[in-house]
Length: 338
Image 1: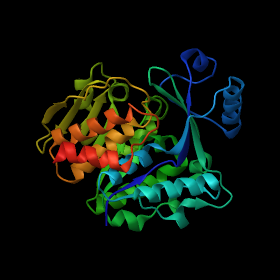
Image 2: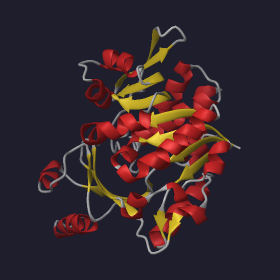
Image 3: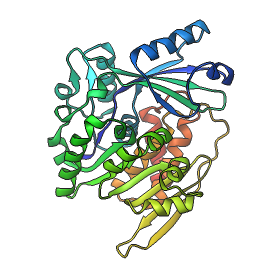
Image 4: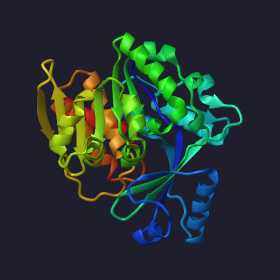
């Protein structure tokens, strides 16, 4: 049995530290994610090499995978559906999940002859992450890569918003959605990035379908999606598509809007822990979603869910890389939930 099954892109992250001037010499939009071909990513890496930039860290990545890593490390049982190549990067990726206690089905995940996706993550001095993603074989993820039996054993189904950018995957996502609906399995969706809302809103609406249980997003994504001008209005507007909208806002309070049986909404604000210095925001939102969902699955109050998630995310941004150690996650859970 699993607490949650997630579906997402399998990517190996390569983090680079660079200044704003160096970033402007690329075609990347600061703070956002850009999809790229293998040739385009190879060109970017050549530009970095010409500037004598070397990767500071390599780690397993992918939005939903980061969330499931946090979920499992906190003590939950998670399953991850993805697609990797039969290459060293794919081996590294699946071993990384296994070490964290995230279950997967390797015979369904590995694509013969495929190339594992990779993400170049540029970190500027303000801690902002800018990403260029080559999806590799993840772009061809389909029904054959997904374990419907694992879903039948799960209490939650979790989608990352980036999946909305893949038209070929939508039929499989709809099949997963329908199985979840038919079996009273709750559904959570993370918008993941402003680029998803800007360039794939139609696909995101398809992922949301006739409604989900929970939406995770940040203030920028929420306001873009709902075409509103403040976070409270956006959170309330999101409840047209969900029962629970969780909207983070950098260092400001997270706004949680819950829709009751009579369609009235209740707002809860949870303060964000103060951070001395933001080093790297890569994975912060993913970790927030994973930690919040873990606490929610364990029947904690919305305030406790927000406190756990905020504490985890605040630790993530104070280090390089999108994930904490298992020991760090467990120490935070003991501190916040005990």
